[in-house]
Image 1 (tube, rainbow, N blue to C red):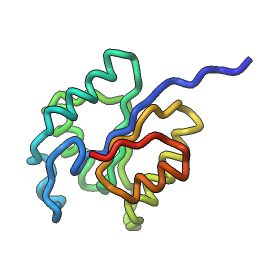
Image 2: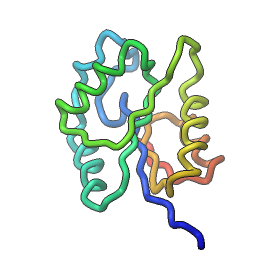
Image 3: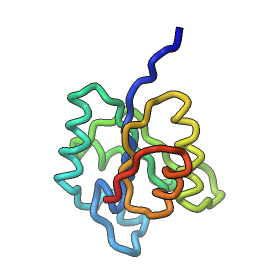
Image 4: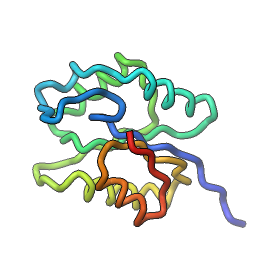
Length: 133
């Protein structure tokens, strides 16, 4: 018997769920302004029992707690948070491609919300629906 995959949506943070300048800085994490329309979109999925995944290029080592506190403060309910681990810098779209590839095995990814055109190319390659924000 084929097991039906759980549906999930994937949201980027900077430039998608929150406003950010072209030159974002890690020291500004936690001070960003939430985009209310995107928060409402994300929370509407929660009502339909779709898993919410946050996928950000932010480095985890120094920014995970600040990011989690910001998400909680802005009433962003999520199931998983993926951040870049370790000291090796990988291009954002390549990091996200690796994570999305793994997520595809576990979830039926309904949409990826992101502001990066390179992530759009990744989604196209992986046959995942993409909404540019």
